[in-house]
Image (cartoon, rainbow, N blue to C red; front, side, top):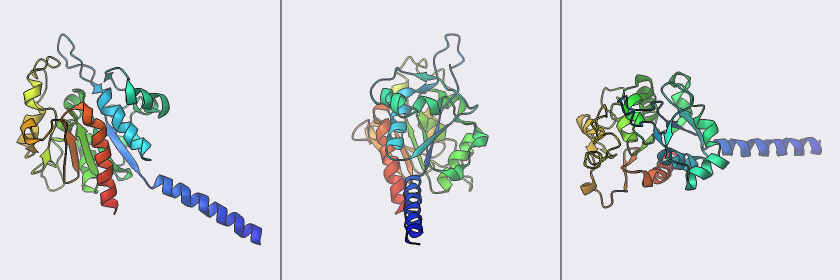
Length: 253
């Protein structure tokens, strides 16, 4: 009898440990399927590896499971060579195995996720920012108490998210992202002329309190307001992920 009790005790302990390990939860990363901007020169759109891989690393290294979703599912295009932490997460944390098999929106249950993140690259402005299915997933995760994060051009993809009361999610909230003042100096999208929208303009139009360089102590600062975590540029992508984790843990207290 004592042996049976001991076995049951050990099994209960193992199950409890597994439960604790899984209690961290899941995070959804939204990526773009768009390869180029549709112009004759085919300027690259896609996703910026350095704005997606580092956050993925932060999430998984803190015990969270991560899924990817894109407008049409499957493999997605990336710019930038894998170096540093991007190279590490590809080699040791199954980044490619996950992102090359991104889900389609209809296979995502928002209730499974504690947070959603959108990295940069121009792609999300082309096929995420007006994708009703993806916008609904973001809204549902947010209204379910989840955290929304974005880096670079990623915040442009949350500008049009509408909540159940009809308000835009970003209304009256401090948000930042790749600013007009920088966009008009870059040739990547012909000073912004190839873009469907300038993300700063769209965020402002939908009521966001857009934070410019002059509003911040440092242009790489992370802006946090009512469970929305954003930053302008790629060097802070991992910091956005870490701050999202802090916000998740705060809501669990």
